[in-house]
Amino acid sequence: MPSLLSVNVGMPKDVPWQGRTVYTGVWKFPVDGPVMVRRLNIDGDGQGDTAGHGGEQRAVLVYQIDSYRHWQRHFGRDDLQYGQFGENLTVDGLPDDEVCIGDRYRIGEAEFEVTQPRVTCYRVGMRLGEPELPSLLVGHHRPGFYMRVLREGRIRAGDQIVRTTTGPGALSVADTDALLYLPGRDPGKLRRALGIAALSPGWRESFRELLEAEEATDDPDAAQSAGPAWDGFRELRVTDVVVESTTVTSIRLAAPDGSRLPTARAGQYLTLRVPEAGQPAPVRSYSLSAASGEGGYRISVKHEPHGVVSGYLTTRLRPGAAVDVAAPRGEFVLKEGTGPVLLVSAGIGVTPVLAMLHELATSHSGREVWWIHGARSPREHALRAEAHALLASLAHGREYVFYSAASPGECDGEQTRAGRLGKEQLSALGIPAGAEAYVCGPARFMADMTDALTAAGIAAAAIRSELFGALSAINPGLTERARVPPHIPAGPRATGPMVTFARSGVSTPFPVGEGSLLELAEACDVPVRWSCRTGVCHTCVTPVLSGDVEYTSPPLEAPGGGQVLICCSRPDTDVVLDM
Image (cartoon, rainbow, N blue to C red; front, side, top):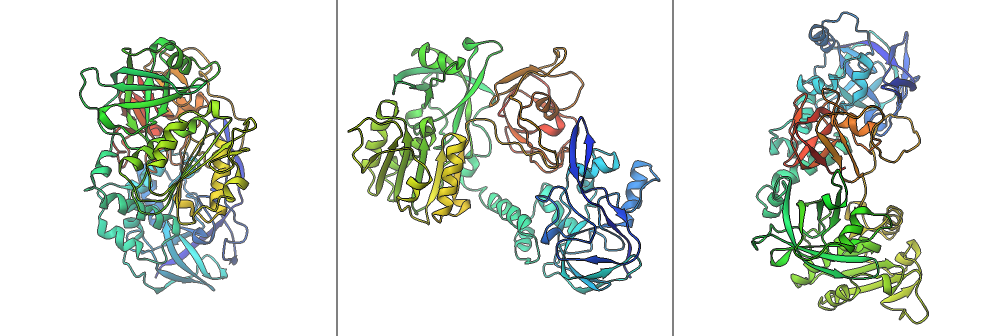
């Protein structure tokens, strides 16, 4: 009969790691005698990163002595102690390929239910001094698992473990883990997983998204979004340059031979490489501001003070010039449907939602469309007449424009209003609660609009936003430190391939034979996203705009076309990353 070998606890603490500090509770140690298990934790235990560990669904982590023996053989070690894999319960029995999601067990006075496999992250490798361990836990099908507490009570080493209920879906922990992290997924197993009530909400949502992706493989739109329309940069010709306002200029692009360019989805963006603006050639991204009809593209660029690229594009670029352009990319796209649509923007954030408005007008959509925009004044309101005409062509179009610095008489009180577009102004419009919202503008504006939309009854899943700059960082466990603008790394200049972080505006050679693209980004203080750091979780997945990379260790599942996992890759050639 399975038995409990050790109960392990530990409170979070600061641990030095690679020149930084990690706040983590992965250091667990055995305790003697009985210990109380409570709904959210075991007495004396805690988690440093409660976003990924702990809580009702992850109250207790279990790992097996058989897996200890496996890793002792794999690493050639004989120094492993109970709790060293961060588990609360070290057990004899309960293998991952036999225990199922939803199984219930009685240990001592307490009763538990299996909810999900362990979430692989870098800290378990940090604890053992084996950085590759997060990937190996998945690849060797030995993740361990979490349980929630159904009945609180005391447990102690030596207690027998009695299974009281078998999980309804007969889906083992190892199979569940592979379903999330490994390729070759079985849609039938995904559906089975979604039917298991005990499965934690986070994993259920991940499986729902994976199933939707599997079912969309026959959808032409889905196939189109599977990867970029062309690799790297290609030369396009400028066919027109139009001054739209005191600060914004539109640029139309076409293929040099006049052939039709691949269709882009409304809301996507182009990335331009502009050698004429500096060396190394700066790279910037701009949203498409119109539907990609007639085989061409249009972007609308705001002339930023001291902006070397925007300055060149808005003041020096002329029709007939050649521009290096990467294929349309981006997930901020208009979804099909019949319900109301809210297009909410401020300033130059108008561009992607204007492209969506073009698409709705071109299709003669019968949907209710709300256009809500904020600008300083009519003089600085780019593409105003165009948006107004598109809305007028829709059967159910509504227009609300707010001018924060309007002169007397410039607002009619209906379509145009004086004052800054904020939470109160948006809430007062009476927007429909069942709408889908698309929000673009400065970061603070998008945060305010998201709060206001949520307060108005819009579901969080129905609110989508587009950020111009680098994405916010995901660095689980790292303690806060002062943010530093992205920069060239300190020390002697490296000699490897040139790496450009497009959103952050940094280009620097890669240090030959050292580290990964993730580590180079960290050295440049480019905002980065990661969790496992070993090619498992795909948190670090990043679009590659141009160039080739190689993996220092193959990821368990390759990312989609035109993407790379920066945690375990290096550049083979000069490379441009969308980060």
